[in-house]
Length: 309
Figure 1 (tube, rainbow, N blue to C red):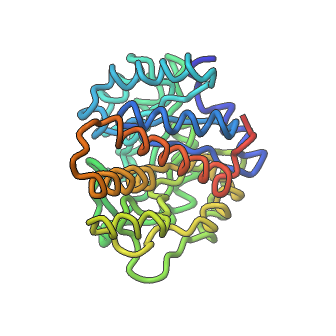
Figure 2 (cartoon, rainbow, N blue to C red):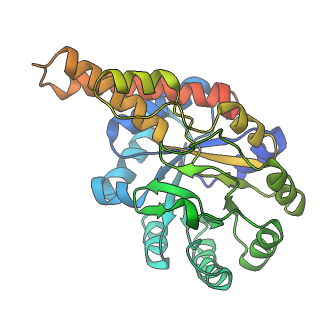
Figure 3 (cartoon, one colour):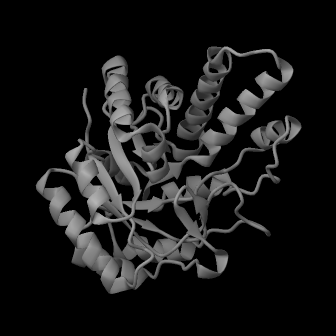
């Protein structure tokens, strides 16, 4: 088994009307929990590294941990750069052995986004690496990505088709109402499925990506709040909406905040109930299991990718 691109994963997902989970990683326990779930569920897997994770853990450590996970689990894994902010970062990750990179030019005007994305696509494709881009702006905060609600813009379907044709990008992250982080909706959550349907019709057989798709399960919100957290009510994207999106051309759904909540809730509970505990293995071990359970739930009940490897 080896590091692979997402190309074959996305083809199967599109034809099978399910989505592949792309899970953000920051340390060993998170990687182990995610990979254990994928092995248990016999599911395709994308592990992705954000700018914040690169700064925190060092990309060399993360890449070697992923290589160890492949050797240990026997899984094919796609290693993806999440929200690459410029050509240099994308090039570095391609050169470092990543099999997929995202260039996020969504903050630029349309033509500048195209120009930047084409440059990354040309370099990555020459090395056998696939590229994800973004069109439209999601509100919210995730690591270095910070967009206010007033600056968020939905993806224009006609522009999406033109963007893909002119850049040669392999997948496209769109904005239809999701947002980064745990704090999403003041009112009832809503995704623009009519817009998604238009994009899918203009881009048939093309992989669409959803960012900002945390669901913030109520049990973890309650647990965080019980043990000193400040997480609001379950304000994430309802899981039934994500299931529907995965049947409408969305082949990749990013999941990060849900993992953080599961891990943090578990650690808080252990340290509050056992304040004298100082052995990291005693709280990171159970936290790893909490991540595994969360990922298995997402694969089985939300993404529909269990048994699809």
